[in-house]
Image 1: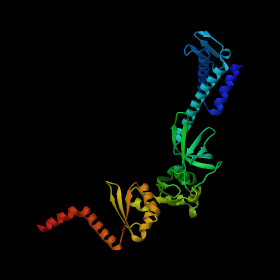
Image 2: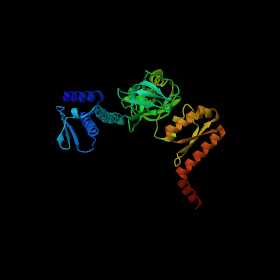
Image 3: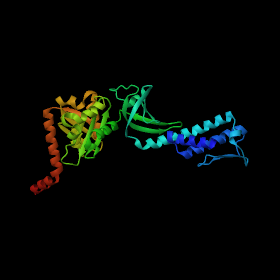
Image 4: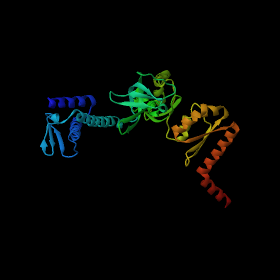
Length: 345
């Protein structure tokens, strides 16, 4: 009877908790050894083996066989259970880690289970929970227990007693995954998301590109009358999203990233990756944005430090003339010098 019970127990734990059967058999063997050690008050000389096919237990103490059912008292059996379930918990932890380790950045559907401090505990599967701290939440959103929620897996950390799954609603990857879900051209790799800059709950800038000359990458993401982008903003509770056209040339990308502001001129320092962006005075506040948000996001998107400089029309005209003269000097300087030298002979 005991052998049948062992096989049923192994099969049940294997199905319910997705733990490998060999791990469970080994756990039972270790539990019985631990219990026998307490029962006989000895550390060495005890071996227990379980037949994987029949469930029959073979127990040996100092070379002589013994019946673990007769030898193990209630207290000893309790100690054995503790060892067994510790082994099963360790195996479960390994299963959860393997399941989620390669899913960082992926969007997962979950359910809000409870509040923990300022954070939320999110049920992800029947045996795995994620934690979303306050810093990974959007201030536009309030969640209640039982709410369905989409989150991005941000970190998977193996700890001593469990696997910590850190999930987020504030990560840029959430916007990326929502675009893949809502916009067929992105899902089919016709439109590529090149960069995402986000301040969760306020605004996101996303740069897109395509190699298909017949596709308007920005229009495809926004949709007719904003129908496609609306599905994403609704999921983010009204967070504003700017879709801009990616360009490998930073001279083109920075003005795109600073939209809706109009840029008058730009000076680039490639060594420091710092740019002076000149705007007319009526465009300055728009370029900077509320509390500096527009320029901050544009800087993240382009990976350049951007300095917004207000300039008058007169100063702008001078700047353009100086720029044209400088470029002419770079392009024709040697040729002009040679011509000038020839005239002097």
